[in-house]
Amino acid sequence: VRAIRGYGVSAVALSLPDAPFDDRGAIDAQIEDVARAVGINKALIYRHFAGKEELFALTLVDYRGLSATAAGLALTAATISWTSGSWTQARGSARWPTHRFVRVGFAVVTLGLAAMLLVLVPEVPWAFALVAFGVAGFGMGLAYAPLALIVLRDASPETHGIATSSLSLTDSLGTALG
Image 1 (cartoon, rainbow, N blue to C red):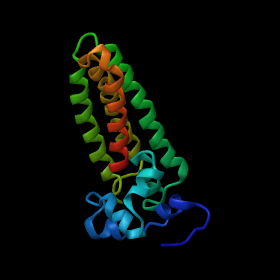
Image 2: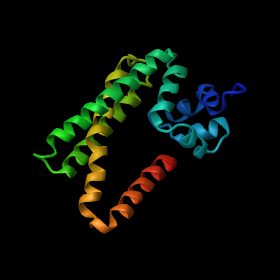
Image 3: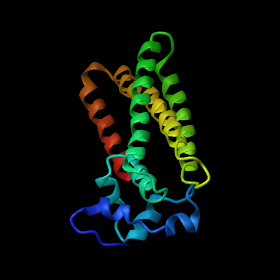
Image 4: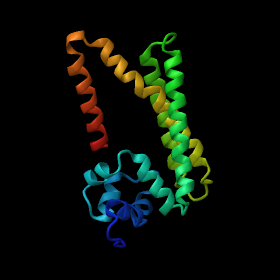
């Protein structure tokens, strides 16, 4: 691992050796493999990167040799499509139950994540990341907002505070633990 002083975990991620990807393949590499390869605790990676999208963008830059602009375009596609998914969910919530959006959103996110893993294969064009991130973002837009609605709907009015804080805690734990 190349030492780059003053840049913290971002520099460690940028200088990630190919070993985790070579040993298990790009699709099967786990965050534990990445952390072990650079000699840090995986919690540090999760703490530094608010979501896995930043780590994926850094991987696009370092592993695929893309520019930061190209990786940023993939993140932008996810952001725009997340908004589109949220808009779709909000417009359709009067016609379909909220749990249906969560189920469909989960399936769409899974499809997008699988497609994003394919971007790590050198033969797959990097522009496929725009589509893959877009699909995953749309699924997140469909699935994320209804969770709070479901929790509030199922909780009695006197327990709304406890229910929403529990939802927030599980969201934070999910981010921290991966």
